Amino acid sequence: MSRLDSQDEFFIGYLGVPPHLKRFLLGFIPVLVLAALAFASILPPLHFDQSNLGKRTKVPEFEGLLVGQPSPHLLVPRTGDVGTGSDFSLYLLSGPGKTSPKPKVLEHVDKWVKLKGTPFHRNHLTVIATKSAEPMAAPTAGPTQPASSSLGEFSLKGEIVDGKCYPGVMKPGRTKTHRSCAIRCIAGGVPPVFVVHNQAGDKLYFLLSDLDGTAVNAKVLDLVADPVQITGEVIQYADTFVLKADPATYQLL
Image 1: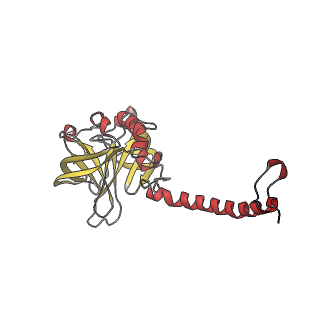
Image 2: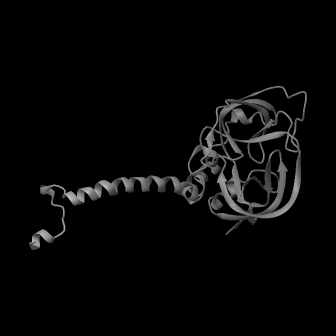
Image 3: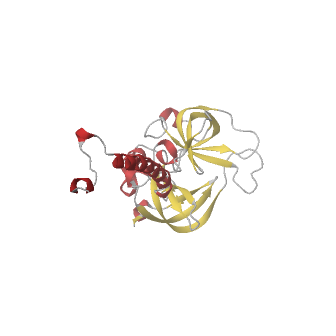
């Protein structure tokens, strides 16, 4: 065998692909593609729960009580036997863009309305990108106001997100990759939401309120998308929670 015959094959452009190299590539490329697809399906659930991106629902109209504080929201009576649960479901409200609902919607605060918009939900957090609201008569039967009760003072660790993108309008809607968008949403009037993971790994959502029960939007912009600890009173309100605390006491971790 000559020295030339014993050398490994190598690619020369004008001579074409050597047979052994061609067989190797035909086997390696499909394996590489399958590995890339597997990696793409495994990574999202591991990276900031991006596999749960929220969903858009098809309900175009809601009937409920429009409330302005601590952030705009709609209280919708729940039908059927709710057992020990709340008589109301709470839906956050935003405008069509990175804003609070339009003035023509908010002029109906504290009234029962027929509200039109596009709802998005993630886990048990729902936001409605509100288009319009028309006043309606309050129901003659059943509760017309949700019960609220203080659960005591807690120190909770979590992240402040905007209540529009996180439920599903944009992806992933949280952490530093979404910081600039979340700041613009909250600055525009979108409800800020405090996301907390309990010991079982479940996600808990809290509306944020100052000590007077009003919105904290402008006071939390420099804390969005970072780990934060908030100590305050937790209030059970409808089917969600309100965390009432002085924003000046929020702590970056």
